[in-house]
Amino acid sequence: MEKEEVRKGPWTEQEDVQLVFYVNLFGDRRWDFVAKVSGLNRTGKSCRLRWVNYLHPGLKRGKMTPNEERLVVELQSKWGNRWSRIARKLPGRTDNEIKNYWRTHMRKKKAQETKKKKGISSSSSSSSSSSSSSSSSSSKEAEERRSFYDTTTTPGAGGENKTDNLEVEEGNKVYSMDDIWKEFEFSEENCAITSQTVASPIWDYCTTDSLWCMNYEEETKMLMQQQQQQPMGDHHLQSFPFYSYMIG
DNA sequence: AAATATTGCAACCGCCGGTTT
DNA sequence: CAAACCGGCGGTTGCAATATT
Image (cartoon, rainbow, N blue to C red; front, side):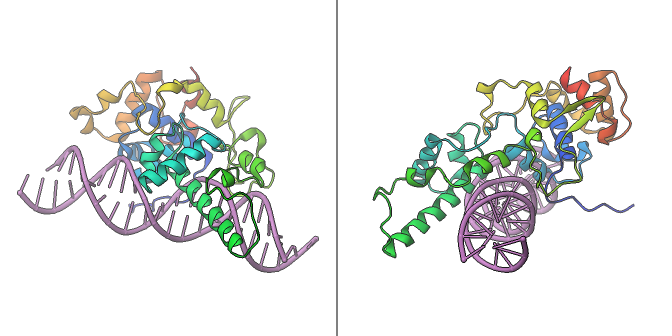
């Protein structure tokens, strides 16, 4: 039997749910392990990236505050492009986000300067970032758009994964990712995402030698059974009692 | 209203350093 | 001790959404 090719590209809601589930089972350290065990056909790297930049419950959503923007500018001038280091000073913000912000920021700054050169007397001489801070145009819509697959306000145009239902159903109830995150109840103050790992009750167990010798699937099945007294068939979302597990 | 340009951002890639085998 | 592996980092890209012509 040959290996299926590893999945790439945008994550679907289903993959997200699956990843969240397994990270909460096994913790957010052993990405290769999580990738294999989850049945997601992704690399550990890809899983980590998705988690760190998007799924982590400690993430702040929405626009950077002027204060944060100021901090980014300040720290960048101080440390250069050490994005992850800078991110550590902005709880809830990821290095990727900051990096993206900076690029945008620079682009605007450049544009402004070219304008100036061309003689169009533009605003204050202050080189301070704040001038360009608010990305004024379209801020609201952009904000809404990127607010984490906000299922309640899914834009009609919302191209991309039309095929993927952004909500997950169990029985009559519909859960969005937001709901799921809420249910996890991570304590905010401990959620400095860059420095904190997600605790897993079975993490210690997972790292014992004996367990590593076991077949992933068997191991997972066993753990699942332990957790919820319910055998699980295979690695497909449909067969998981995800929600009962996550919600209580 | 359609065509084209710009922007914003999620995700990939390659490299590097630390850890494990 | 060296080779293999893995995770983290920063740079870059691709594409959908939005703005402009």
